[in-house]
Amino acid sequence: MVDINSTLLLEVALDLANSLNNSDRFERLLSTIRKAIKCDAVALLGLNGEVLTPLAVQGLARRTMGRRFLINEHPRLAQICSSDAPVRFPSDCNLPDPFDGLLLDREGDLPVHSCLGLPLYSDNHLVGLLTLDSMTSDAYSLISDRTLELIAALSAATLKTALELKALSLSAEHAEQLVKELTQEAFLRDGGELIGESQVMRALRSDIELVAGSDYSVLILGETGVGKELVARTVHRLSSRREKPLVYLNCASLTETLAEAELFGHAKGAFTGADRDRPGKFLLANGGTLFLDEVGELPLSVQGKLLRVLQSGEIQPVGKDAVQHVDVRIVAATNRDLRKEIDSGGFRADLYHRLSVYPLEVPALSKRENDVLLLADYFLERSTRKLGFRQLRLSADASTKLKRYGWPGNVRELEHIISRAALKARKNASLSEIVSLTAAHIEIPDDIAAQPEFEKPVQPPLGVLNLRAATEEYQRDLIKHILIQNDGNWSRAAKSLSMDRGNLVRLAKRLGIYIKKEVVGVN
Ligand SMILES: Nc1ncnc2c1ncn2[C@@H]1O[C@H](COP(=O)(O)OP(=O)(O)OP(=O)(O)O)[C@@H](O)[C@H]1O
Image 1 (spheres, rainbow, N blue to C red):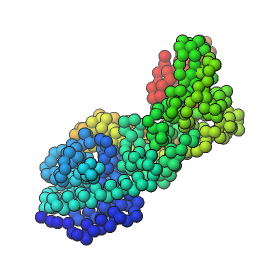
Image 2: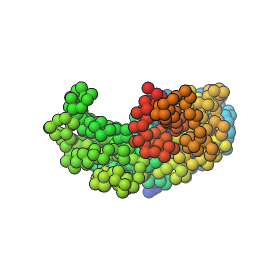
Image 3: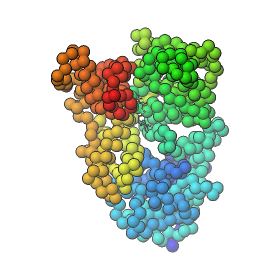
């Protein structure tokens, strides 16, 4: 049996007391473990609920950090989690390895190899796992249990110190929430996690943490599909209002009366179709947060009323005399340049100043360095689970193709392209194998396909004699076509048509095009 060298133990122990940041702390831990035990790959995973999140990896592709492992979908991880001692998997173990296909410099299946898992306990609670993979069979049989237990104890202590240090630097109110953040809890159940390690995304995350704790209004700016809604959800989740509702209102495509009724509620009979009293979004969000998406599209008259509510904290439902006090935090988002809108008279300057106490700019995906591959891996892991693959990975040519593209539709476009690629690959693949997505699976519009569709001739409708009907038919076809091409994304479709989004939505409505995100049909 082989025992661990005491100098290495000392190194880890000293690192615990050193003023390292957490990612350095984790990296040092893994380096020390690799000196103690020969292995080709090692990963430290933090546990949150049912999700294991990589906190540091060595010998595995960097993009592994974008993966989130649901315990019950990975039998090896489940076995380690349910054990209170190190688990050695025999070389001929046929349970799928969560890191299949992710080992650095190795294409394809993991050959017969040794795998070792250490559950990490702190105060009798499982806080994470350490996994080690070696290409040598039976690599771990000679390492004593005592050595493994010591490594597990030191790793658990490192994880615990990291969590505690993070918690100490925060107000007690947010500590618990942010400890979860440290292990990057995937907000899988209700909304998703903001993935990204680029400088700009780190800066955004720290701005979000800063502003979330206050009660200021937040204005989220950014192109379509960058993740503005996700940012809004994160602000709410990190705020003291998180136990209260987060209410969503899309301000586009609302007429003046509808916008007012949606925001402030209405009395029965206030207008045609108002067959009962209805509370508005402000009341529904009382105590919590109201997310006003596409706030730049709000009709001017309603902007004035919204401003008054923000100043007084009182709402007056349409058709009612009585006012009601509400306590609501506003988070608004827009992909428009509101300063330009102010200059052209489309947006009130006073409302802008009220909303943008704390602006958050979400960067375009093309500005996020290597985040494209990290996000691609995050979406791949989701497709792996949803479509029942054993493992999905990107081939080198697919990665290159993704890196080269400019991403005008940002993260949403990447998400759709990966989902479509996975679906395409599923047709001819055996789900029990590691499936590589190649460049051929990645359907990125080339220069010609990316041309706005309206520049291509659309056939005039045949057999229609009336000019107005013919024009409408033409408009209907064109809008449907452009919407489908843009995955049902109204903002992008409007951009392709050089139109204002609100006008496009209103026109589509008038033409009877069924309005729902991602689905395009005609009533
Ligand atoms: N950093 C991120 N990490 C993980 N997923 C992301 C990230 N950013 C965006 N997404 C995902 O991309 C999709 C688009 O994001 P979202 O709807 O928040 O964008 P948006 O800026 O509000 O778009 P729009 O302007 O069209 O309303 C969502 O499915 C979201 O979960």
